[in-house]
Every structure is written in C-alpha cells, then in structure tokens.
Image 1 (cartoon, rainbow, N blue to C red):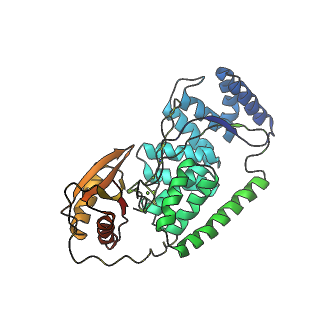
Image 2: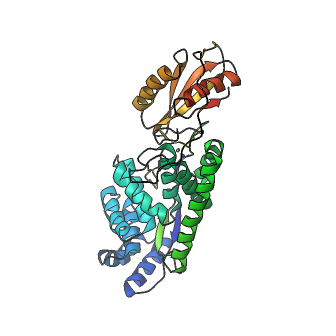
Length: 355
C-alpha cells in the first residue's frame, strides 16, 4: 500500500441554509490561507451539527492549521460528521481507529464509507475480504470493492487488482462484477439525489492513498487472501494511511457478518516428497504479509510443518506496518512452484518470487 499521499482537495455538497453559507466562507478562507478565519466560520455550524463543518474542523485539528495539532479533537469531529453519514469522515475515522489498534470499530466505519462510494475505504474493505481478516474471506466481494477503488483512482488498487486477477476464479470474478455494478449504481443514485459531490465543494479533503496490495503474492495478513497476509496471490493486508504533514492515518478492517465466501479454486495435490532447499538458489516463495513479526513466525511454524517446508529458511521483511514472509532458497521456478503447490494444498496462498 506506497503510503497514502496527502493532498488538499475539495469535495462538496450543495449550499443551502445560512449555516452552510458559513461553511462555504470558511472554505474560501482556508483556500486563501486564512486558517483562523476558516476555523471561526466553521465552529458555529459544526457545533450546530453541520457535517461538512464538523469534518473540516477535524481536518484543521489533524493538520494543525488555525489550531494546534490535536488528534483527539480531530477524531471527535470526524466521529460527529461520520455519524451524519459524511463519507470522508467515516473513511478517515476508520483509518485513524485502525491505526490506533481499534480495528473492529474501524471496519464498521470503513464499511459504511465503502458502501457509500468512498474509494479509500473500498480499497481497505476489499483487502479485508480478500485476506479474511476482520471480515469473512469473500473473494467475490473483495474483487468488487477493489474494482470500485480502482475506478476511484486509488493507485494501490491497480496492483491489488493485478494480483487478484491471477488468483480469483472466474466464477467469483463474475459475481464480483455484479456486486461492483450494484455499488456503482447505488453511488450514482446518491449523487443524483444530491447526496453525492455536487455544487460548491464544502469539504476540505486530504487525500490518502493506501499502499499496494501483496508483494509478489498481495495490502497485508494481508490484501493470503487474508488481511494478515499481503501476498500477490492474494492482495496484501489492510492498508495503512501514511501520516501527513500532513500526517494522515492508515487503516485495516473489522468483523461483520458477510455473505458466505465463494469457494476457492481447488488446491493442487500436495507433493509426496518434502520441498528441498538448494544452496545458492535465487528463487523464493512468498507466503503473505502479516500484521506483526510474531504473526509471521507463527504462520511459518504452522506452514513449514504442514507443507513440508522445513528445509527452507524463512525471511521476515518489514514493509511499512506489515511483515512479509518469504522462504528459500530454491533452485528454479519449477521448484518454487512445487513448493507453492504444497502450500496451497493446506489452503494458504503462495507465489514464486524470482531472483
């Protein structure tokens, strides 16, 4: 998930009541660099319950513009705006909660934002469904949300989609396309009803882009197909929002009842003989990206025994907030594919990594 780059943009709603007019004046002051005036314009409407003003105050406290940096205040204002259905607030609140370790509550907000069409949230939720972390593993839904994240121009979704294309069975892709069309239709209806971005932008948005999913296998145990793993054969696990100087939060999902995941493709038969390491071999296998080094070590202990990998040497590489698990050395692509076949026979994703 390349961290989410922060850039200030505007996303908005229609000007209406006098309170909203104050929000508009605050946006104009903010864009002119008069942050103190912007805060003054937003304070009243925010306290009166205006979601755009509440979100904008959250952004101000998060970035320390016009007020001291105060993450607790930022989260408080995001939470108020999120409760009124403000997508950007739901997404950023979810990212901050996730970054703070409150993953289940984070996923609740991220799912709301994703269902309302927020691209960053769709990327995280898609990763969660792919990895089966915080949400039940459901590759059809993972494919759908990642397609929508890609359509929203979340850069990291491009790599995740490439990885998903390689491992998700065609029948699940077709199911995912149907879900993605419904998500798109719902978002368009909301926009046409005046609930989506339209009119004068009143929301000061900081764009956060998630890191790429899976590396040679796919964002993190994380987007096996499990959030704790991030392998290209499975998108890597939950994304992380890079702090911005802009310090922006980063996310990962929470458990919720989801549609029964479609059955994965049949696993290849497990080789009769254990995998053999080749000294000096440059090939490796990737077994996912995990939320911690301990989680990666625990996964290796289990997989090495079940898949006959004890002759291989594991490596644990930090990748932002994740730990990538690889093992080797292997002498050729064929040997790496044979090792992955043994791993896949245990129900875990795996892919070969070239020298």
